[in-house]
Length: 257
Ligand code: 48F
Image (cartoon, rainbow, N blue to C red; front, top):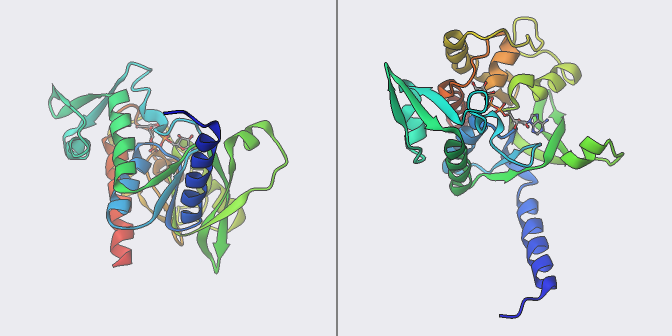
């Protein structure tokens, strides 16, 4: 068939505008697209909630691609094995309740599963602020990551949502913004407490325990939970990240019932 270049352009622009218009007012915005975001997005989309992820980098997947020090292998523990297997990730039994997976294969499967469930992922988009209405988080303010990167003076645009999830990892960026601009979080000091040094066992447990609503309609998942609550990091064991995403989805779905 003869190829018309303008048909390529027209097809991209038509579909991109249609999809973007569908994601301006949604149930859930997830900021950051690491492993915890991919789990929570999949469950929320499966539950019928309109769910959009904004990820600053070109590649969604956060810190999962790199395995441990770029050896492309991650570890999960027995309790989170199902969350890997249900999206078709092959696991190897490493003994004593530990399992390994290829980090690239795992990330690819998790991204595909979130998209297949109906979650929309926008890559190369930075969330730079939130909307606050009546003391609650009510959406986010976004811009192209390239605009942010180049320091161009271009005003952002706004997305409305019933819930925002901070899945930005170690920096807990959205919680930092909310604490600075909107008031106290439900942390001991009302502020982001800051992540503590590596203790894998405690870090894994606390990530799940710290998965919560930290400001009205702002939830936190994954590594950001420990950054916000002052708990340790845990390195390339990923069960806590996955279980945290699962818990955040359960909390929001239960609230919607
Ligand atoms: O850090 P990250 O992978 O999130 P996570 O789900 O997983 C943590 C693990 O990867 C690892 C670990 C495992 O034990 O400790 O670190 O908590 O992914 C966070 C994503 O958020 C993006 C960032 O580029 C990364 O891909 N991000 C951060 N801030 C913003 C953002 C922002 N303001 N707007 C958009 N994306």
